[in-house]
Length: 150
Ligand SMILES: CC(C)(COP(=O)(O)OP(=O)(O)OC[C@H]1O[C@@H](n2cnc3c(N)ncnc32)[C@H](O)[C@@H]1OP(=O)(O)O)[C@@H](O)C(=O)NCCC(=O)NCCS
Image (cartoon, rainbow, N blue to C red; front, side, top):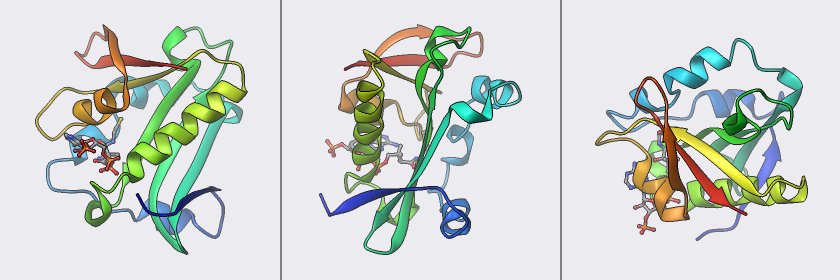
């Protein structure tokens, strides 16, 4: 694993974060339908957006959501989005970002971090289960909810 670090999303790095590339077939998995819908209702102050840097290069993005009062329990301490640049995938960057988010959740007093993903060949299920997420439920769209105990 390289020397990766997190930096708050800002005017300086947002363009690079928005321009992160995807591998063919991954487009469908970036924003699961349940998140796309919830995005319209979520309180913007509960979001935790960070870029992952390798030196000065933005190689990934992670957005967490921390809202102890969220009506949907799985949104209270959650991985909302995680994305690693196509050419940088497979080097531990995604794992680094999710574990950093897990640390943040732990510091905020949460005892689990949840994630939501769509099953499928090019999807991130193996990535999340590799880290230790266990499937705890399913949405009406067939997406999986996973939880990582902290
Ligand atoms: C999912 C994603 C963030 C993983 O990032 P990454 O930096 O490649 O992940 P890591 O290198 O930390 O991978 C850790 C493990 O998961 C596995 N893994 C990663 N992505 C995987 C995938 N799409 N399918 C199967 N296994 C995968 C790796 O093989 C690795 O296992 P290993 O260490 O035993 O070899 C990245 O593939 C991505 O940006 N995907 C597109 C966006 C997306 O789907 N995000 C999730 C939406 S909720």
